[in-house]
Amino acid sequence: MSARKAAELSPEGLARSDRKRLAAEEGLRALADVEKQAIEVRQNMARLRAIREAKEREKRAADAALQATLPSPTTKKRKRKTAR
Image (cartoon, rainbow, N blue to C red; front, side, top):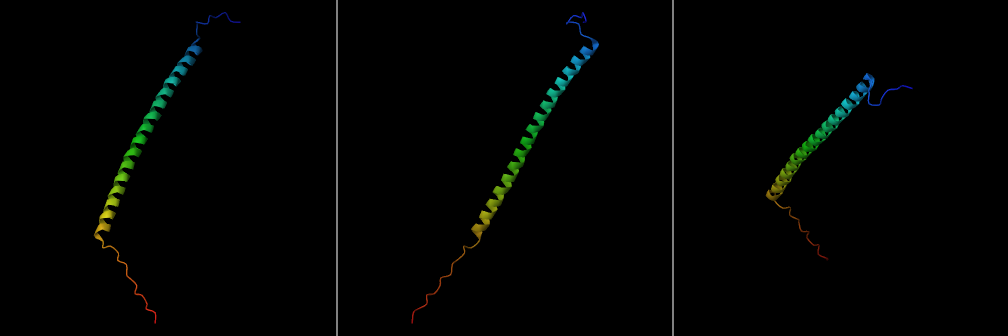
């Protein structure tokens, strides 16, 4: 067995711990990036939904105005046939 102390790290061990640290930092950055993109997507969806709903409200208002200007449909009364 080797008589090395636990406090002494080999160059390979130092490189390995450095790679792990860098990978952990990169992972945190990637997660933050994904969360930022998700927030942007939700904001864009909300913006597009608001635009669509505004268009639908305008269309309903225009349809209501058109219905108000059209004459109301009249029903024709049927003449009763008299019994002979």
